[in-house]
Length: 331
Image 1 (tube, rainbow, N blue to C red):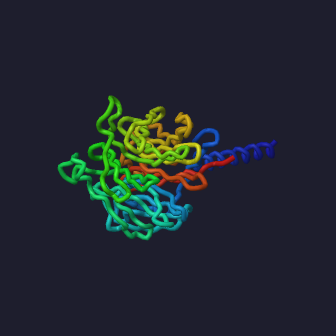
Image 2 (image 1 turned 120 degrees about the vertical axis):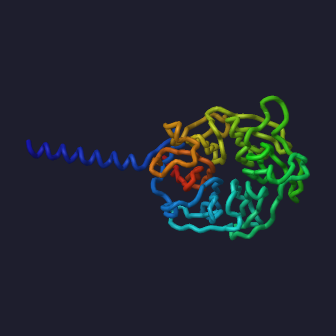
Image 3 (image 1 turned 90 degrees about the vertical axis):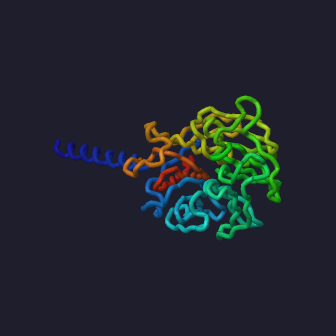
């Protein structure tokens, strides 16, 4: 009898250990879109890394690049989070949106700078290739201070689109020689005006390029053709979409209000809401103390990038900075 009791007690201890292990590796998603929150990822995050108010991209060399408002304006790390470095020190304070593009045969970054009121093209070694200043010729601004770009995207023909998300809520188009062409998003039919067009994605579908825009304060995505005409709008399952990235048959949206939304690329129906924060008071907040951070609960997803293996990297709008890795669980 005594032996039986000891065996039961041992079983209870084992079950308790398994539960604790499971709790330290939260999962979220649906069907083929399941993800694990990688707790404790990133040695560089043991101390404050500065306000992570920007974007995330995963380069072809496997490095993850993200913005901070600190001295290290563009930081990079490896997929295991063990190595890190930085470029673009002279751009610190105000780097916001990033897009991965090609400079010849090499990867490069397109950067939207809210405080310098410009767009910057930079090689991954930190060399600046060119800049695009505020669009004075548009006639929409009294000064550069009114122009605060949040995102940038490049079309296949080399034209550049810039969202003035923190300024006039316009999208500006520049040709491949960086000359201003037009702007759109403010006027038009009722319901088409943008309100904080935050993130941009140059989306290629069936060989046709369109501009997918995170219309944050209208709680939707808007698809434009490259002449600025609204093609479609999507709002199901979205709160305050900040940035969007495509991963195969799905779009992943960093939603400032505490979650990442996975959307079917064909139907635009939500597939899953990843790691939704159950406390509305902790959503879309910048000053949440580390003691209130929990594995498996987003606070303010802002930028998002996806690796070739399906792993997802999210930067959160938090004053001391946080980058979250979600590991794609494949059956």
